[in-house]
Length: 472
Image (cartoon, rainbow, N blue to C red):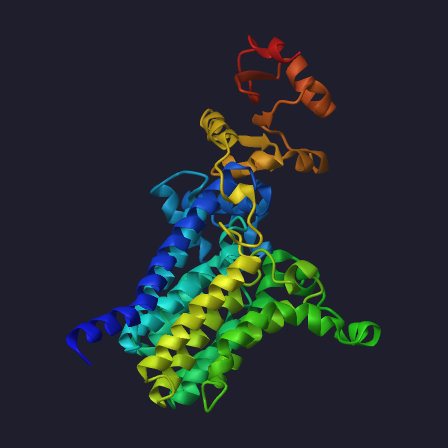
């Protein structure tokens, strides 16, 4: 082979690497752009974005886990890590911050994976393909674009835990403790991965960590959660599905409905079902898949919204471990084999995106993910005129734009309990569209209009009444 032919061959083999890294960067940008576009369209409302924003802001300002006015987020999930995230509101006090943190967690997690793969001496074309899959697969897109949820920390902390288990065991306690703080069930989710490394490396501490993670989740679910929430975990989350009932009524339907979402997993991992490559594939995401697949809620077992967050990250880590095991056994050591699998992983990720993706050219693409709505900027401008002190009453659709404050309620809560708001922020729709109580406040002079521009209204208790006639 001549020198010219050698260079041409080298260039051709480098194409998957260039394509993989380029697509990873492109999809990371597309996801961030889609997040802000969805935010500007008002997709992020009181539940769950507004509540998370409010909790994070309160964590930063001396009210740990306080939600809205008189609730605690710990009655929803034991997400102790939120206390650490609240710090970022001192850096940038903006309602879009939770989405930025969620996206940054994905990016930093991808960088940790890149470092882990580099340490394991996995070929660059495989690294590029894996990073592309990690960032661009539709499950990741779904989590990133589903408002904000604490489980998005999986994209940062699970890769960090895997890196320490693989390469730096002396620091494993840091991501281990942080993982337990994601949610009450996370200890059970990571137990199989901890157990895998304990057995693989004959690592005594690994057995202890696996046992500790499992026991913490049991304690958190059956003791700590009921103590903090006032109700049992089963009552709060709902009963798991009665699979026997479904088997008797619809035969194979439950398996088809609940299993079809994972057909892409099967296609990507088929090559590793030789020798020991199958072990991490089946083990790492097992509990995460079981938790979502046995739920009675269609939104959960169909893997919508943020619910794939547990198993998609662990499946990616399982792929990495399977590749590493296969390379050590010589199955992927040949350049042609690694080139073939890198191309296969890139193509299957693109096909999956074309079928179920949310950003540009995806099967679930919508205009709210591709165009910034000018109304979003108008709402943000109006929200800047809202005082930070006092209880804010607002429309549920506007809560995502103004929840970075101490106290917040929406109209439905006003009807449930006798709250006394100090400020009201609403998209004005005529006096007929509001409860009688609102009309009384305006008519008797309890509240005065402080802002009324482009259809958005802010009224404050005790404010000047000079502009009140504008809305009659």
